[in-house]
Length: 72
Image (cartoon, rainbow, N blue to C red; front, side, top):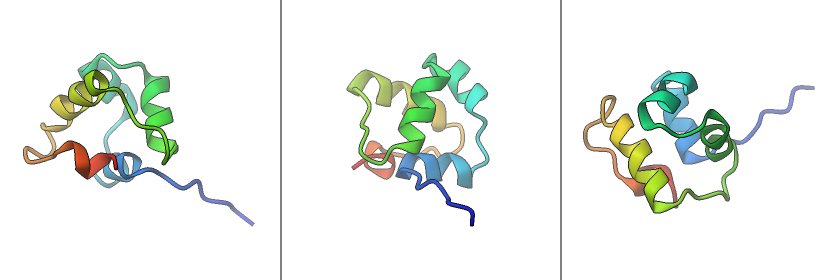
């Protein structure tokens, strides 16, 4: 039996858009481990600075993306 990890809204977004973690890490200047943690943990929320940097990078994929699209 295979157990699927539940992904956060942020994790589902990067999966849906086939965004590579290496690319996002370099573009946002956020560590890959932080991005992985945010994508895999539904209860973890980023700091305001981290979320702004991630949003800025992800606007290349969706120019209308907002913080509440990725985190509760």
